[in-house]
Image 1 (cartoon, rainbow, N blue to C red):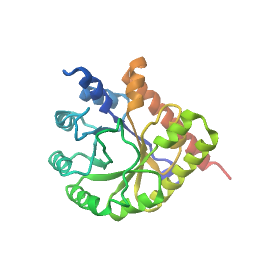
Image 2: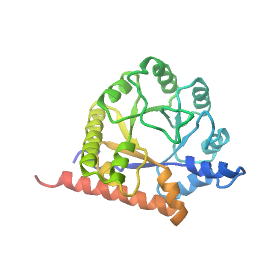
Image 3: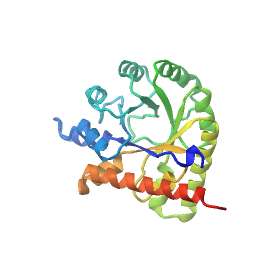
Length: 261
């Protein structure tokens, strides 16, 4: 059995919305860095944090403390701006994921248009890679966007799973089937280009398993659902449940791939 069918699927836990709750009243509680510690205990493989231009959740101090206090790799989500580049180069996290960002949006709406933004994005990728930082592009599940990401030197693509998750919530089975096939095609294409493939956005207990079963995906980044579920069962419990569903899906995929035809 080849390596891609047996490797563990990594879970990156996004702690942004722990900071959202903290910032709703100010002060220090709840602490996103403590959330990162809990995530590590619960089986997370990495921590994701999005430092936005307007600092609506994660703060500069949060990034400093995450780099100082957390042993897990930090994936810094950031817009392609001079300010964010300077911050990334100062802290040198394990990875940076370039994402689209609009002040008026509630959350990230779709993927980065790498194909159209090639000339703007390439210098950012070049500087980050030169600093020893892994660079990911958060993109819609379209082969052309994966091609563009590879052409500017990104090592990783993270496919936006929001449309798939919305289809699951709506319960339109034709749309569910179409979106899963779209995602699967894009994943296979990107892996064939030699890119490391991640996925995330909107994943829940109900939508994660079909995505986790895609053998070419090596990491899922999940945050809002886990923080919301933590209200009812605690953060460690919500992460452990997600980890269990991911592992179950990957084990089923491996068993199916290794079964006689």
